Image (cartoon, rainbow, N blue to C red; front, side):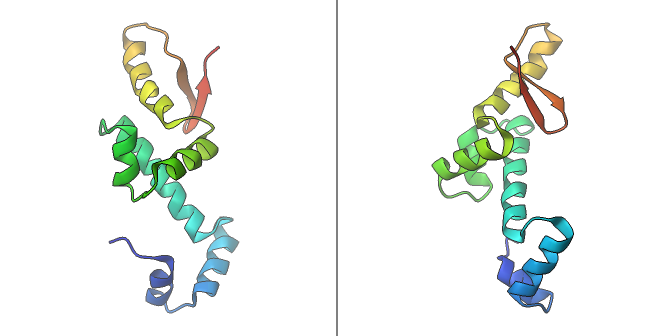
Length: 114
């Protein structure tokens, strides 16, 4: 069930302001920003693991505007969503010893090859 942040606050018996303040205190991010990041990570998972296209993963994760999704994705991961499609190809390419344009250096850190 996809609840709004105010609905979550009500379920917890808190005001929206209290929930936001407490959440930010412990996680150093607002609940809204956290939800946005979860959606972006879910998009990556759907691209890499489920074989969805970038557009399909955008809308499957509750984004209503592709342009906004694209900008947020690029800002968060310093890479275009299509580069994650290439990453999936990179994993296959490694098995074939073919050089692909990007790779993951650390979990979640995308590195462009020279």
